[in-house]
Amino acid sequence: NAVQLPSESCIDGFDKSYNGNTMLQYLVTGNCVTDLYFNEQYKENAKKKLLEEFPESAGKTVICYVPYFRYRNEESKYVNMMDIKLLQEKLGNDYVILVNMHGDYVEGCTNLIEIDGFAKDMTGKMSIRAQFCAADIIVGDYRDSMFETPLLNVPVFMTNWDQDKFEMNRNTLYSMNELQYGVSVKNTEDFAEKVMNIGNYDYGISKMFVEKYLKNCDGHSAEKLFAGLADL
Image 1 (spheres, rainbow, N blue to C red):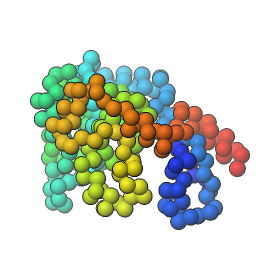
Image 2: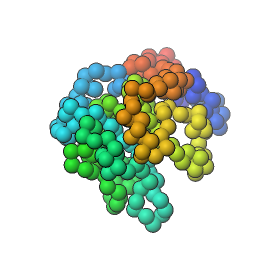
Image 3: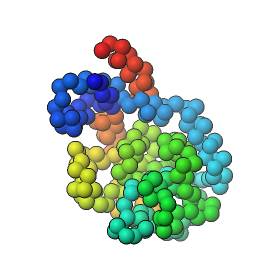
Image 4: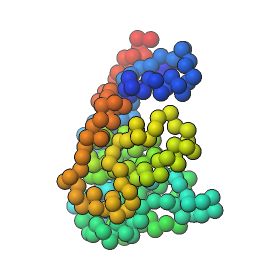
């Protein structure tokens, strides 16, 4: 029973998750899926695919927005997420937004998601990781794939203004303070302001996250995994 881990720092968490199962063997080789982020051809193809799906993105700063599943209440079909129309008003014509909605709320969501020439719902049109590779800026919070984004070395923002509630409801192994992988934003206006001042972006948080949790993700995780399995 082997488990692939992206860093030695993850061992304690997995021990707790598996209740100290001593039969497990940890292969600290990185995460295979993250090899994509080091593949220049894959990233180039992702950008070409984006132009096919969203021609208006040509020459614009591309923001990939990945909101987590959260309705205001059980009856509502309005999702707690950033205001796309307000972002258009604040950012103007030099930006486009790719919105990747959680599968549970694509249908029936009453939020304004698409705006011609500015915001496009890319859910199901490109893989989420391809969208990351095509983006200049990434913003989101608790979706699993978001925790890989610091590897891309682009500005990453976290809309984790409700992290205390999230921790309480999900019973997470780590606190969200420990898992801070990007710069936090308070609301739509705060995000827009930080984007317009992107030259001041602090990469320190993302770099520390990579060093602690993704240290062995180097583009060769699959190779190392196969070698490790052969030695078991």
